[in-house]
Amino acid sequence: MRSNVSLSRAVVAGLLLVLVATSGCSWFRKGNKLYAEAPENRPLEVPPDLDQPRTDGAMAIPGGASATASGVAASRPTQAAPGAPASSAIGFTVSGNRDEVFGKVGDALGKVEGLTVASRAQLLGAFDVNYEGSNFLVRVSSVEAGTYVSAVDPRGLPATGEAPTKLIASLKGTLGGR
Image (cartoon, rainbow, N blue to C red):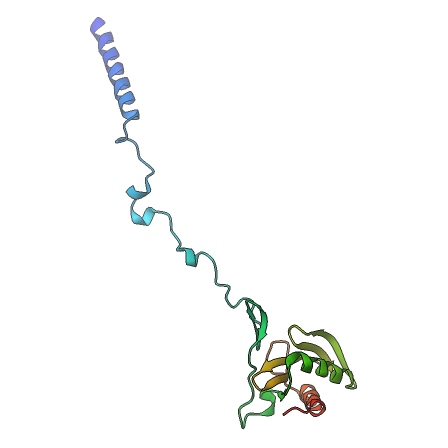
């Protein structure tokens, strides 16, 4: 019986020795090394220029002004091509600088019967007006030939309808536009 006890002790001691020896050995442990994993198991790496959406045109004002480093500058408005319908671009050009013409347009709008100026923004060169039941903007912007005065709907497109056409014709007559 004595040989059975010593044999079982030898087996237990051997198992403990193997357990202790393998617990510290890196061959028997599964490591968490990124370079050792297969490429499809590695975490996804996003290039720096793709991790955030583009914001270049996020603040672009439709139909005219764009932001610059020194402030807000108006771009050249589109004018109707010869033979295009009059409603495609309602506007005219006046000689003079933008700020001077903006003041003259404000004075002229104040004298129009039935017109309400809801707000004015000289920095943007715009008057928000209500005339004969229509709401639209009267925009004053700089161009090479002087200053361009136009009617624009809330989406930034040329305003269509009888009221904007009538108001722009009245302003053109008052300011002497071409």
